[in-house]
Image 1 (cartoon, rainbow over the protein chains, first blue to last red):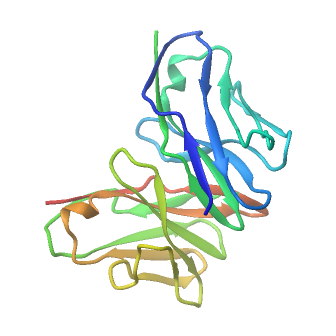
Image 2 (image 1 turned 135 degrees about the vertical axis):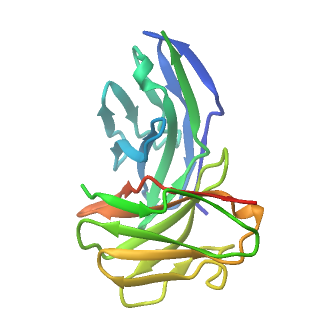
Amino acid sequence: GDSVTQMEGPVTLSEEAFLTINCTYTATGYPSLFWYVQYPGEGLQLLLKATKADDKGSNKGFEATYRKETTSFHLEKGSVQVSDSAVYFCALSNDYKLSFGAGTTVTVRA
Amino acid sequence: SAVISQKPSRDICQRGTSLTIQCQVDSQVTMMFWYRQQPGQSLTLIATANQGSEATYESGFVIDKFPISRPNLTFSTLTVSNMSPEDSSIYLCSVEGQGRPGELFFGEGSRLTVL
């Protein structure tokens, strides 16, 4: 079945540091890929998405590129802020079902 | 976008009891999804609720334990039956964005603690 593997956390960074969260997937067909984010005390929300190979999703300074050859969708941000502290989930969609990774907790310190 | 309201937001329950979680969406949607997020874990799909038909349950989840109602296109309930401490989780209702396959909008979740 479909599955998503993302790097384990927690990750602790200083402000303005570079953030990478690795995500790889296993799926049949051509899934869409997503990053969801859960800020402290808030509900889960979509951060960015990519629907086909080589697409780059971007939002709030975050980027991720759909790499079919390496079955990856790594999340990156060049300069993090304290407000980026959250739990990040990589996910894939096949048919109408979403499969989520385990989540990576990111803490950014001032 | 869709605005999703869940009730209760949190509850503490006794072993052996049942609790019903309500989910209200501000627009009509065909499918509503119920997820479970156990402590420190990712989200696991429990079932998909379609209006006018029985819910479709994922492997490991059964109707007797998690009965679902879907009386109309904006509302659904999930009941957690005969609870045990292992059912302590956050239960999330979600819907797909109109014309946006895979893009889910989530409620804030219902955090259940079973003693």
